[in-house]
Length: 349
Image (cartoon, rainbow, N blue to C red; front, side, top):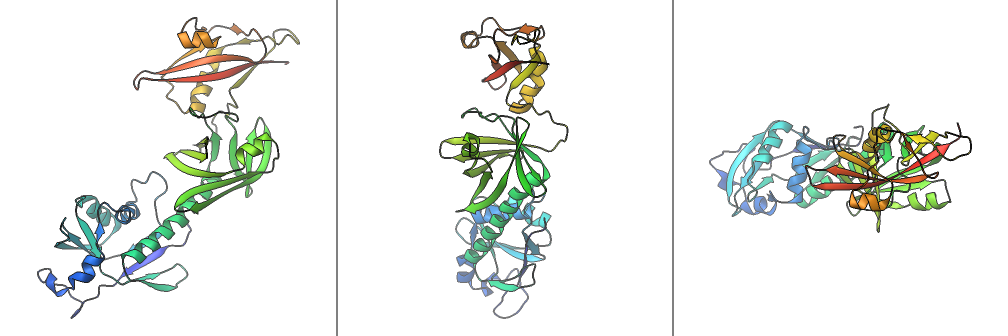
């Protein structure tokens, strides 16, 4: 990523020389070392693991801090007693070293650390508190950058929320010539998508140029949580919004679960629907495994009692226009059921 990087040059400070005898650890002031111990169960230790690990990041690798090797780390046991010294020569070794540390143990670096920004500006980190502050600031900067990049690289589709209304299901956020747009029911709304950090929490401020109910729904400061690498949960008070990242250019745009078919007779409001044809779209929008069992019902009572399912592979004639069909999806392996509504709309063709 093309963002500011902290480049760390670790300078080992010794009382009598620049060489370190592994058998002579008493020559180093224990108070200075113990004061800057980083426990293996601390946030700072976990952030160091994330920075050094470039292979298993759920999102883009953290690269805003770049360690200059070799560097020397000191290990302490559960009693804060010095155990060993290790020289680290690359990220892979650093990651492996940190992964192997017992959760009850700790590490320390030798301060001060001389750092340089991409601009060439130098500054000094004198202790672990200043190190944590530098890392937190750097990671916050990177979170904001990555979140801004997300919408530039792929589109984000409003997904199905099992805990909130799905008023705008299937709508698509994307970046176009530096402008954020929302594609909803084939209408394009312009606006902005602005990520920022509040008290170490990632937020997105969405601002669409719309003063209707739709604008009131989206135009909020949303707190952001990664459910996985392709799914964001946006929350504001009691409101929740699921966004699914779609990077494949040919993904199906299934809209708001409103499925249309041509009227059998002009102005009758009646059409024939093959419900099975909509199954891929339903699973695609819900981000569910397409091997789950799916059942269609004409009434809520039938869906509740699991009786009188509609045969999905035979023509179904709606009984009124914009008719609601009730769907049950069975995830037998996890003993879960999903309850979904779709709308059948007869249109003039």
